[in-house]
Length: 508
Ligand code: UN1
Image (cartoon, rainbow, N blue to C red; front, side, top):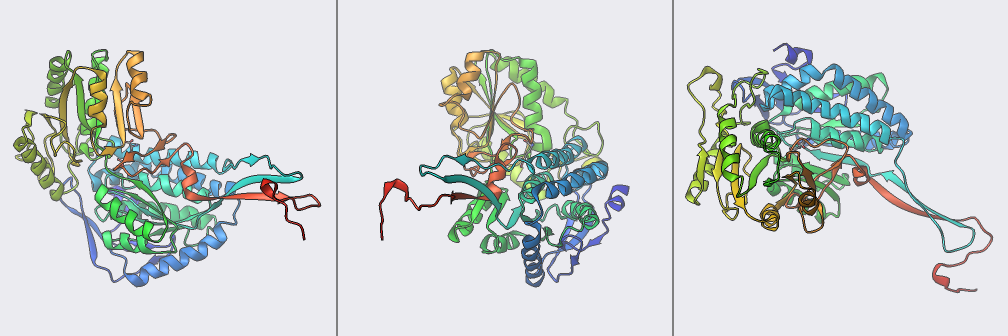
């Protein structure tokens, strides 16, 4: 495991940091076990209240300085962060794969996503544009400008232990904010490794201590962030249940949230689809990251005329999947994150059967091979269902793919939309009218709607997020940066009179 040494990780790590200072904490030990081999990778201490307070005070002071740095200068720091991540791409990708369990290809892809968002943020640092307006009054000028918010709290999930944080941090920083990151307690070492990489860049550029902070812990530390009135924006990625709790707490103090929660993403396979291409998109979407992306393909809605043909090839493809150590590049699928996730997978399969589901590829926990010793490897499975089954309406973070038939496109779209979540969606079709109908008003109700592409694997350049129980937030590309800033409208009178708007007369 030379990547651990390269990333300066040891068996015991301090987990709380304000950049280059690592703060001792008496919080309980969080031990990170690899789902790949079940071995302990290392421990970090959870952040206790005193360490949290130190982090908050340091980041508050850092904001006063950082916000005065010109945005392109902040962008220059982010450019260097991107370069440093490129240097460490191999090691960090391996750590992501080893601590989280996704395939090495996907681990490397996750680090690439961090590098990409840094590039994007560098450009953005010269483009935080406001509009100018025409005043109704003579000799007046109106415009709007964007100011940073302050401390951005970032709560990230285990499934993208580094990339989703970087979408938030890279944008937040160029906008002039400072960040306090609480990673998932299931993947603390990825966050420590990233913080160390950043720390070097920050030290070389005399970035104030506190611009990038790290705290560790479970939902309780998340609650501290949600309650803390010093944090104007909390960006949270995770389950809908977690997001609702964060949202209620932050809304209770009229703070802002940016939520990226559960998905229940479907691909519609039309009778006009290129079925070979569709197959690849469906399989990668369903089994990539072992079904633990929020963009994972959970449902296939297949036209009745191609249903038998498509499910037959799908079953064949599932039989060819190589499941095993994700660091071995020849494997397609790694383990689930832990045994709790395995239990949830088994429970969902049980419930699916009870509710009437018929399995085309049976699910099971894999055993009998040394490679499966951690107990976290499961067989990706496929079940024929009705969309209305409670289990199909629910996001189970595991490789369980539900398939169903449709006869008209309107019906397919209704099925696609007929779940509480609204993150990602796709249609596989070569028929232009169908594609456009899927994208038009009355089509997909999701934040992401693709044509001839699966539901996962979005590029950083677009705004990422979804509707309904997905939480409504938008991160990453497009104009998602606006969530990290406050808008100020300025009206300037450069004339010699004080005319009032709306023609009101007020003479004294
Ligand atoms: C997530 O699962 O939380 O679109 C994020 C994708 C990735 C990001 C997923 N770029 O699948």
